[in-house]
Each structure stands twice: as C-alpha cells, then as structure tokens.
Image (tube, rainbow, N blue to C red; front, top):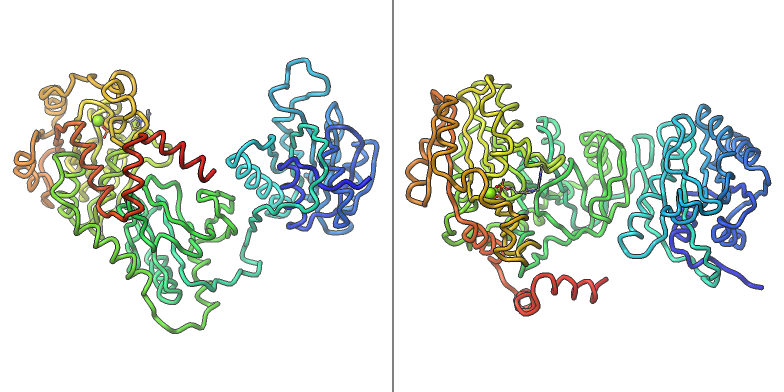
Length: 580
Ligand SMILES: Cc1ncc(C[n+]2csc(CCOP(=O)(O)OP(=O)(O)O)c2C)c(N)n1
Ligand SMILES: [Mg+2]
C-alpha cells in the first residue's frame, strides 16, 4: 500500500519546517495520536528514524544522539502518560543545553479535563525542562495557518538559540487517515541571524525601513541609517512615534490611510522592521520583512518575516554598509515617496472643526525641542496625518493602547526637564479616566494639555469604525456618550483652575485661532495650561473621511461605491470571499 503525507496542515508545516531547519533525526515511540506525524515522515527518506518503546529511554537516546552528532534530535510520542516520561531526559537536555525537540501529540485542547480517555494537560512545563513550549492546534483558516508557521519557526529556531536547549511542541491531531499528499506543500521559513552568521545579500530594487514606536535615536544610529539609505536607495517609513529625525524619513500615515488610492511606492521588495508596536496606519506591501532587534524574537507583525536579526540596529546597518561597494547615491525611492506625500498634503482642504483640524492648524507651531504626547487612538491617528517639526519628540501609549494613562505618562515625562515644554492631546474619555494626575503635586508649569471634548469616544462614531453600523445607537454603550457633565463648559475649567492651571477653551475655529498663539508660545508660562476644545462627533468623522479620500482612482472609486451599496461590513465580507 502506498501512503504519502497526511492532509493535516499543521503536521505538514511541522515536517516542512523540520526539513528546512535541518532536523532529520527522530526517536519515535508507539501510539495512535502521533500516527499522522510518524506515517508522514517514515515514507520520507530525508528522516532518520529510531524506535523506542519507553519514552523515558527515548528522551535519553535523543540526548546521546544530539551530543554525539551535534544535531538537533526530535522525539515523538502519543497521548496518555507517554509525554510525562520525557521529563527526566528533557531535564538532562536542559542543563546540558542539548537541542532535543519533544513533539507530544494531543487531541483538541477543549477535551482537557472532560474525562476523555488519554487527554492530559500539557499547557505548562516545568521550569528546567524546556526553553520554549508551543501549542499547535488544528488549522481551520488562514489565520490559524499563519500562527502555526510562526510558532513552529520560533520553536525550531529556539533549539539552537543562545547556546541551545530543549523545546516542546504540543501538536494536535484529528486522526485523519488521509495520507494521499504526494508533495509536501511549502511553509514559510524564518531564519535568525546573529553576529556570527553569514548575512543574506540585500540585492533588490526597493528597500524601506519601517519604524514602529521608537525610543530616542542616538546621533550615531541616525548617521548610519542615513548612510545605509544613501547606498541602498532606501527610505525610512515613519509616523511621529518613530522619532526618526534623519534625512530619509517619510511620514507614510496619510498615504497609507487613502481608501481610494494605493500609492505604487507602498509596494517594496524588502522592508526592514525596527522599533516596537506602532499605532499608525502605515500599511505597506513588502515582499519580505527583515526584523532587526536585539531581543532576537520572531515578531511577524506584517506576516512576511523571513529573517530576524538578533543585533543592535547600528550593528545591522554597519554590517550592510560594509557589504556594499556601491558608490552611487540614488535617492529615487525616497523622492518618489515624498512626492506622493506632498501631492496628498496639497489636496487637503479646509477641514471641519475637529481634532484633525486642530492638528492641521497647530502641529507646525509646536516649539523647537518640545515634546508631544498623543492619546489613543483618534488623537494619534489625526495628528499623524500632518508633518511634525523635526526637533519635536512624540510619544503615545502604544505599548498597551490604554486610554487610562496618557495624561499620567505626559506628567511623568514632564518631570525630566523643567525647561522643556511637554504638550499633550487627549480625548475627553482619556482625560476623565486619568484626571486625578492633574492634581499630583509634582505637576508644573511646563505642561500644556489639549482636551478634545466631543462628549464620547468619537472613535466609535467614525464613519469607518465597526460601531458606525449602529449609528446613534452606538452612543449608548459603545461610545459611552454623555458622561462627565456631557460636554459641560464648567467642569474641567473649575477642576483644573482650582488645581492651579490656566484654562482656555474653544468651541469653534475662530475661538481656537484666537487662543492658539498663546497656547503654543515657546515662552515659559507661569502655570500649567489646559485648553479644552469642544467638537462635534459628526464633524470629527467628516474630517477623517476627507483625509482618507484625498486621491481617487477608478478602482478606488468603484470600491467606494460598492461600500455605499452593501455597507462597510458587507464589503469586508465580500473581499474575504473573493480573496480568502
Ligand atoms: C483602558 C482602556 N479602555 C478602553 C479602551 C478602548 N478605547 C479605545 S479609544 C476609546 C475612546 C476614547 O475616547 P476619547 O478619549 O474621548 O477619544 P476620542 O475617540 O473621542 O477622540 C476607547 C474607550 C482603551 N483603549 N483603553
Ligand atoms: Mg472623545
């Protein structure tokens, strides 16, 4: 009887990645739950398989094999108590840093604790048995498949990471008896590069650097990134929280927010990923992504990761500068991107009175060397549309995206340098959430805070938000409208004045323009200052709609008409059906 690979996709991915990462030695123990895996590898001549009835012995055999051959060695066992017997061998492997891969097999994790035969809980491991443990459920859709690829790459790479050691994969099976797959479908391989490895060549037309939220850049890092861009015709895609202040930056937020226009420069060959979580709308279309971070962890934010470089950013760029003899200084890519951005910015009309309008009018007035803190999500989004002065550092709580601590983070930052001015822009919900910090006795006169009070989380009334589907009904419990004095003109004024703040407010464009110069003055003020701007939710949404539709193509226009006919939600469902 001819049998081939299983049709269970997770098992296929594991086998494909074991081959790609050069793991061929397997010690197999008997059972039912590992049949999909074992039957698939025993017909593949790549694998060198040994049998051991006793799982305890199997794990020690793997230790010996790994130590003697210098290779990673996999173990495979069934359900019941089989995997428990790996414990002593894995402990030995842990303390000797031997690359032993324990592949335990399991039924659906929902069956744990339901008195189902042979189902035990392997979701936690003893501290000194494995360096990493991953759970691999059965794959049902593209998202499951992506997660499986990422987790398995991480697990296999961990075998030889930082001196190496044992790793655990808990692999679910549905006991499929379909072994008719003759050719193993490929899986995406992710590789880790550290300073001792050979670096992959960077020979392609379009190279971009995407920077998520980033701490302050050193002068040396800026210089080396700029030299890299000069040599490789590169560009640095940023939002304000990237805080890159070199020569090749492009604020790509506005370009990437366009609904009816996909700028050609958004498509690139290699995107180098720096920094942490980004709250920006920057959504490029890279062919592959190289992440550079000393944490060395696989973080597949863009689902196209092919390399993780476990290096300081500066060392990465210096290495690639050494690898090229190219002397030409072509800047065609950055120029192309800048043209796109300028073209869009030129098209921005007078916006309705809103947070976006405030940003448009104010951002260039931020004094030199000041600091800006932006609230989650709307304030960051709309201030990201416009260019910030080069000497201004910008922060937002994009680590956890909470509205609960934006004002506190601003106050915390302001304690560092009494001579700097620390600006903040937050919504009303974010302000009232965190308002007690306004009374903290360390608050001083270097604080200037704009509270955009639209009486709700206007985020949930934005035309393109899921909650917009519910119209005004969203105000009740999604947008939390009407709390905290329901846009009271006195509440914030009384509170902050009593706490020693100067208070200003604006309910329309003229009023705002009148107070703006004072608010943004580079001069030291006597008191901390709070400017409350009262806006209307509908206008907030209208302003964003305008900003997201500055440029149109026929394809984009058709897309928009369809959205109007079948609604935003219907459109997304249709898109998923056409392009799953
Ligand atoms: C602690 C916490 N709770 C809930 C959320 C979900 N959330 C995201 S934006 C938002 C609305 C914020 O409203 P507001 O501060 O008034 O800003 P606006 O959207 O009106 O500009 C909420 C509740 C969150 N991010 N953090
Ligand atoms: Mg609000």
